[in-house]
Length: 179
Image (cartoon, rainbow, N blue to C red):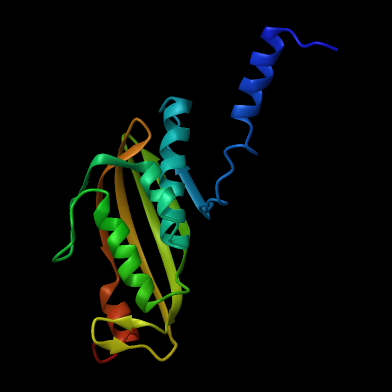
């Protein structure tokens, strides 16, 4: 049986759109999701997908996830000292932190989608078994939370405001005395 040109094109388009062709790692699902239903459905879905991919990047260290969602003009609005701006900054930060906590994982406890922003409340866990600056870990448990606010345009994160529970983290890494 000979296929005509039109069915071949349709078949090719169907295969290209197939999740099997563009399979990406399983993305984190938020435990709680709050969405502004007044936003157009396509915008809501694009914003949620961008935030889930970026959260999944922090969970897995898979840089392709961050590269897929960080805009070329991405700005870290609350950078720690020495953080490089642009999409390179988070990639370097993830690599650095994973040298200290190689088994780092993250969960999205809450996601709020409203206007052009997505708020993620992230829960990080792992073990300090690598190095952090001059410190060598001994398998200490690491468990801290962070809250990020992403500004999203056209499905890409253009800006990020973030705050981490660095006091708990530094105590767990034993760079500070515990309270």
